[in-house]
Picture 1 (tube, rainbow, N blue to C red):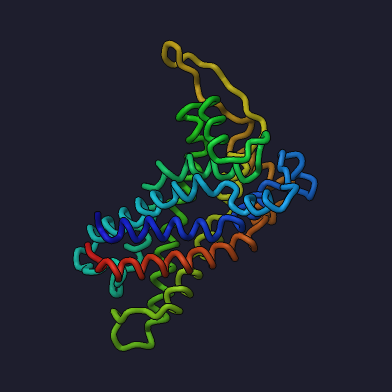
Picture 2 (picture 1 turned 135 degrees about the vertical axis):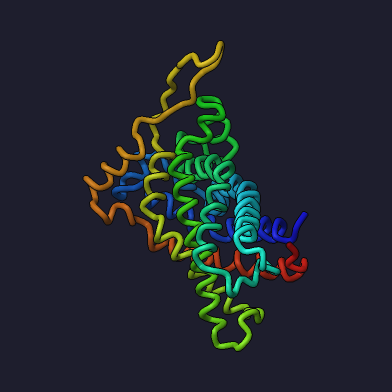
Length: 300
């Protein structure tokens, strides 16, 4: 397969492994309205050292397995879409001169393409991180969702996930490329290879810009996918079939509730820890991507 497939796959898996614990804290902050909400949501803290250690990686299995594939879909879709708009590209890691508007559009296309993987992995990850109903592993969460909702249950909250990813990844690639260009502007050759610091800083900035731009959507998505109430509505679509499980509130209903209870601040609860995670994860992820691409030749 192409260099960008492997580079994006492994860099995505590395990023998730590094940032999982901070992501757990972000999800809990988004779903809480007070310190007592953890109990109400069924969150159970580990009671010994071994469990505390394994809790660092709670909910990581689904995203580690899924995010490698997601990152491959993202970068392949981005690279191919951008190449269609600008055939002059000779190396996907050297985009100096390519219009930033085209980079945003290609990023949005890539983000939308990740829907097939991101929607179910986000659902499983968020529920596993909150240890809802005593189900602490990604597998148990997947089994419970499949039992109650089948394939449609796994894609619950898929629409807002797709909107979040499309909009967010447009800014992701745009801000990374802009940051890298600004840092490389001290060189006469715009295609000079960036230093490790250039890539780490640009990747970190891209991660923060992306999450700040989509954070309200992510808050709504997280609350939607982690509602404790899980009801099953039986509707005969086909003989012997059962309609997927659904929860009590819609995205619009959750947005109204957040606004009514907390105002604009409610849509940014946990943004600090999220920004820290985004900087670290995306700095490492972009560095790994560029290094692997260089090692494999950065081929198209």
